Image (cartoon, rainbow, N blue to C red; front, side, top):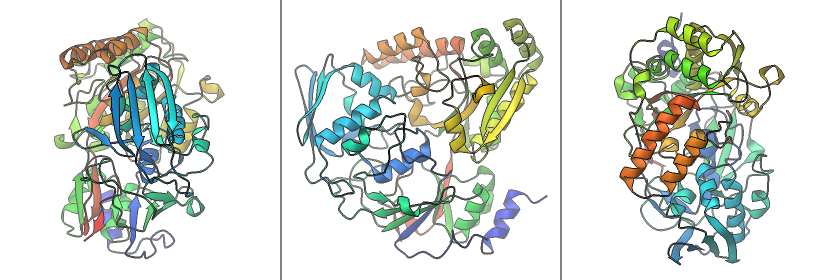
Length: 524
């Protein structure tokens, strides 16, 4: 049987059989292989990482974040704070334009903030603290707050999804649970919707009238200087094909490099690998709290004993401990709010006989469990395979449902029974920046907004306490308590953290750390 290493080594020595996708490109074109196809170009509607990466190309943000997680003005020139922290006036930079040539106004930004806030945990917290959000003139965004909210720049500039991207008022008026009718931003690239090939290609061209700010580029903060006139995203059938294409010089950059192919690349001087984001990817197995059997908290708790984080991470990142972290709790490891509270449940060998007995005692009677697995995802497919395995070992009746990633996103919003297009379980990988703290951690909310529809008065009350204090030690104790509650109520199962290498041609320089961005990057 031909393994992936042999396939890549062979394919790199010959031309790939996809001439329409690997045709020669001019020197001013950057050729990129995303981890998955861009099913939804609206980064507010879709919180997928690929939509966020696309969003940073096309849209811009009021504030930017550097790799130290510090915020600085981006679209805004600056801000003033008055009335004991309850009045913020944000002033837009002069000369900002939308891709259609219209002037960016504060009204556009107010509408964009309102739409984003309906989908985001931090945005919801900000709006709950806001008495009035208005645009008194074309360049001023005004927040009149009920109570001080010192996290305002962080909320508006964070990189965790969904990002508070700015768009014209006519698009921001779109229901946030529906996709915007067109893609128009003010960012450094224009999206070429007319060149999209579903499942295969997306194209961007440099926006010549983009106005970079001054400063030092650092992730999404500072000037966004573009050195390529065109960026082509080519969706490859699998990561091994993309790896071969980069080796052969037919692609410049592949977002996700398979861990098991690292030894192949090590010998190739024409390509390099790097881990751009030290916070890595935090993974979860999420269950539907509205439908049996996981509407029963005793069943959710009983299944904790089956969760083998080591098996999950071996499947996605291999056996090199440099790329894996277990046990994972509900906050990103090696960050201020990370907690070890209650994590002994994930340590040691799994006792599946015991789990089967506990599931039966909790009331599980063999109900079918529909597991949604994105079959076209480098990481989520193996996570789904292990999820099926551990639940079957625990005696659950698992229906493995393989779909493309876009179809999983569509189906997981169905609240109905599995027999009516619903679901019981899905797996997902989030970036570590998405799990930093209760302000941004959307999937840990107890408000029932995110698919899975978790309701938890205890978690929501603790989140409110966290937001009400700026004392880091107190916040850390609150996060310990949130984790203890989560391990009792089980909003989802944390299944491990891994670090993801990226692959790129050796002649590329200036690549930013953090999530993939396309400014400052050049050839030579």
